[in-house]
Length: 122
Image (cartoon, rainbow, N blue to C red; front, side, top):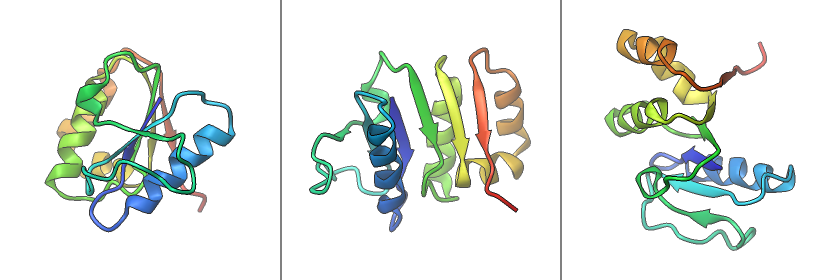
């Protein structure tokens, strides 16, 4: 699985998502921190692997939004995630981006794979 997020200044959110996935037994967990593409090791959880979404073809699940941000790079990353035919959990900033963009909403509705929103508690 891949955690896609960690926009500029928010890499910790993607790391927390990756660490949680490991603790829950997800097995092989990758992190794509779009705001720090050269970040390649988590000293607290060295078994986390770092790859960009474009480098991974055999994903079974994808989490997008953990500290993703709201800029153009975040919108591009979310668009790429929506195109993948894997189970997708949409969290945090990704939900906000979709709420604000009709074209992303349409792409979401066209997804053939399982898609789960993870809204914050009210």
